[in-house]
Image 1 (tube, rainbow, N blue to C red):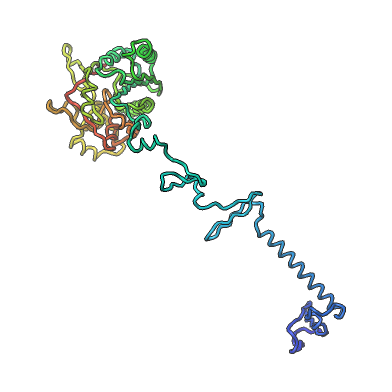
Image 2 (cartoon, rainbow, N blue to C red):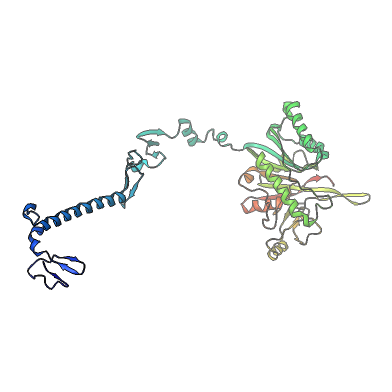
Amino acid sequence: MSLSGNTSSVPSNTPNVYYQATSATFWPSQYQAAILNPITPLWTRPKNATTVMIALVLTCILAALLSLRYLSYSLPSVKEEIMIETETETKYIEALGYDYQPQPKDKQSGLPKLISNGKSSWNNTELDLFSDESRKILKTGEDLAPQTLDPDSNSLLILTPLKNSAKHLAKYFKLIDKLKYPRHKISLAFLVSDSTDNTLQLVVEAKKKYQEQGPKELRFKRFEVYRQDFFYTLSRKERHLYKNQFDRRTLMARARNYLWTRALENEQWVLWIDGDLEYYPPNIVNDMMAYDKDVLVPNCLVNRRIHRFKWEYGIYDFNSWQETPESIEMLKMIKDEAFLIEGDGDSPFRTKRKYMDHFGKSETIVPLDGVGGTFTLVKSHVHRSGVGFPVWLFQHQVETEGFAKLAKANGFGVFGLPNYNIHHIYN
């Protein structure tokens, strides 16, 4: 053995195998053959060569054990839920003791697979999707109406919001009783709000009288009474001031929306009637239905005192109107948040719209852009389509005028009968 600070003493004709200890190079030349020849018997090798050989074997065994330990950490456990994704397929490994089996692709969906014979395949069984009766309905349309709650032909739902209306209810029901319309086709629904008189009690008593105590031929199809208080009051002097109109009208819109969404079932027509009307013709429902319009209103008048000894009927419902070239130009100039209201003297806007009393005697039916709610006939599909009474500004309007604008924006027709008159009480 020789010790040197470099490898220059390594014979050039020996393999390039050496061991480095500290700063010296150890070259086991005398043990070279014994170490490098693994088939040499241990008892024929030098002592130091045997030691080195044992060390090498132990080192290899240790390295193998460490490799197995590393692989055990890198491989997934068979007791965990594992899914190995590849580009071409998904392989499942046993999870939590259960053997997961891949399912055929056609069974991955939770829905039956429709096959050409009109049936479905599910777990190798055939399911008939339609019964014979269902096939008959789909083919001919028979018996479809009662299953889909199509409107009851010519049925009418009368809707009336009420507030402190006790003194007007006798007149209200008297006018209803005079209607020339089949009683079994009429349904009534009321919403009583913020009343401090006995309006609610009187309506409940009227329901009992008509539906329980009275003769069957005078009973309505339905008679519903709802109560929803909004805790909003104004004195009679304040109710028509412009500064109060937005809050007041949006509250009225909320009341109307509450009523029709609760009461409307399968009626074909909806009729909004004020609780304080003085007169309308007994045949008015048939007359208005004959026009077959989506939304239709008559001309509502009121008998006002002109001077001490003279009264005269004039327009009451200024909410029914038609846009004019002047009003359209005005709309282009005002801000988006401007709220328009008709008939209030302190309003900052002069709209120059055309009211119902501005049409000629020969104009039987006219298109309108705004309507009131004193007596408004609506096809029920207008409401069912989602057209209600806006509680936000829609084209500068809310409540009934907003309803008319919204109906027209959705493609429905809005019309008025300027020479078909009804009367509102004077208050």
